[in-house]
Length: 286
Image 1: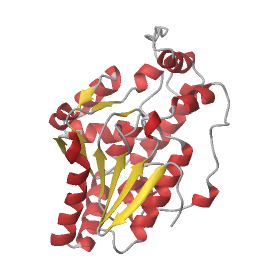
Image 2: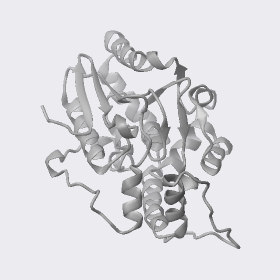
Image 3: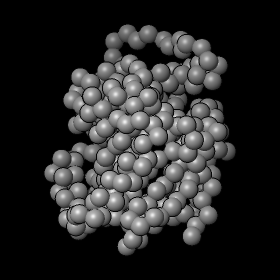
């Protein structure tokens, strides 16, 4: 078994549970965490005991998004927070699902031929939102908070969320959540169809795990794999292009004053002061 530093990985037949494990910083996302999650997903995918995979967070949060220390360093051109993880090289997902799904940085979760369920036990923000949207199902604590937060950091709709979110909620709701970065509870997230259900906090993880156990007891894993591929292949065209465009736009946003102001204002706990625009906003490189 691999010794992970920033996640926990447990298998209790038929459930594999991946727990983001940096509770002191609300499980803020790092490159190391990304590599460990990817490696653990690949392990669960190849484990015949595992029927479904549950992704959750340790402590009181699910994931606060990107580690703000890392974001601040990136804005200053410092890459010291990027930690190599070559020993965790892995290729989760089934290439038969197609490149649009299989090659995504985080949307590869949609090409894993086993159900992937997000058990959102606490706050989920920033880049963690498109990650949970790439899961097949989402169960969220009623009192947990979700915010896209990108507009408040001078960023853009990252990691395929501009493709994922409107397909769940419609464009008007998606743009509201992206424009305003307003915080919504698990209860409102369920009403808006961002998540499948809102539950008391103490029930979220157990509910997700029991969902997998019920699938294992009553359904064909082969059928689940084929149906997942059918659904995503028939709805997905354009996902990889959307994610890759978002990645390019994200890199460009790191060089703008708005990004520095967005991060600094958060770290300094004050309202941001962004410049107004006249005419068209930067469109990015084709």
